[in-house]
Image (cartoon, rainbow, N blue to C red; front, side, top):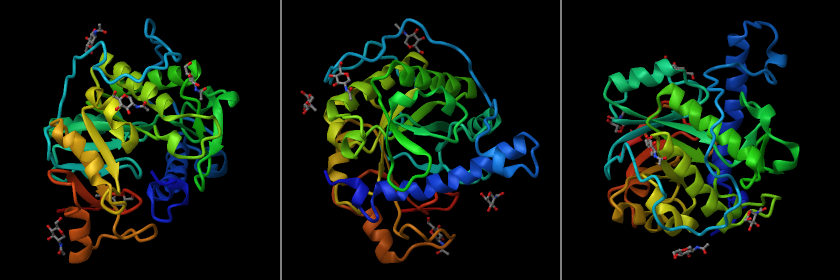
Length: 323
Ligand SMILES: *[C@@H]1O[C@H](CO)[C@@H](O)[C@H](O)[C@H]1NC(C)=O
Ligand SMILES: *[C@@H]1O[C@H](CO)[C@@H](O)[C@H](O)[C@H]1NC(C)=O
Ligand SMILES: *[C@@H]1O[C@H](CO)[C@@H](O)[C@H](O)[C@H]1NC(C)=O
Ligand SMILES: *[C@@H]1O[C@H](CO)[C@@H](O)[C@H](O)[C@H]1NC(C)=O
Ligand SMILES: *[C@@H]1O[C@H](CO)[C@@H](O)[C@H](O)[C@H]1NC(C)=O
């Protein structure tokens, strides 16, 4: 796999745009929430108390085990298994404010969206996947203070305020369990844990593929224990070792990077691939459809048969084009 950090239009840079915007977006929301009005500058480091589940999960194993597990986890109760080819929408920029896209699956930010948005989508017959970063520290999140300095690794390239975390750490796993509890509190049907592929990046912690396999399978087990479905975000190298525990794949830019056939393993396993392409590149976010040629490249890539493809702006706003 190529080193994503250096890919000019690759996944990492792609997300950086979104993250930058999220930093400022969240700051604005927090400031509003606290009624700070003029205190925008201070808002950045403040955290609201939105949906703090505040529970400590006991009885689940932590860290440790270095298993390359390819079998199904102990709790095989999967409440929701979406079908191959199902239509979806992903909107991570700001809280969702447009539910008009007629798609049975929405992927939205866990922290930024209130329970009422999730309930509203569900009342329209939709399932909701809640996005959070499972493999990085983001200094603007509500629970950022809970991370230990010693668990933080390298900065993520151009992403301000974001660092890789030691996914072996009991503290990190406790935070992630609390995030899963928050997903339950908010009524999410599933979760989209991002940034599990530290092994593919300069993480500064020595995290390997085997560590990622162990972590992703642990996340799956914790999600399933809570009645949440879960998918693998990117992470093409570890598919074989986690796919049994995943209900879907979320992939960015496999058409652009010519690796959709890697992710077609999910289709073979009767699990959807939620696939995003960004033909407009890093800097153009508008409401215009892409060219016929760009659409073809995004929609007809080798190995992408039956993928649930969306063409999106890099900032992951409301705008979407389907194949
Ligand atoms: C949703 O919010 C965006 C800003 O994030 C704004 O540009 C857009 O007009 C809003 N859409 C609706 C339907 O309110
Ligand atoms: C994580 O824990 C496993 C099992 O103890 C160990 O083999 C691995 O080296 C650890 N990884 C890191 C980055 O500390
Ligand atoms: C498995 O998950 C279900 C659904 O959340 C839960 O009710 C059950 O207690 C779990 N079983 C075990 C053994 O953890
Ligand atoms: C883990 O095990 C699976 C299945 O045996 C194998 O295909 C995969 O290459 C292994 N991964 C690692 C990182 O060892
Ligand atoms: C843009 O593409 C969508 C399909 O996602 C289509 O329904 C719509 O008509 C197109 N709009 C224009 C202006 O061509």
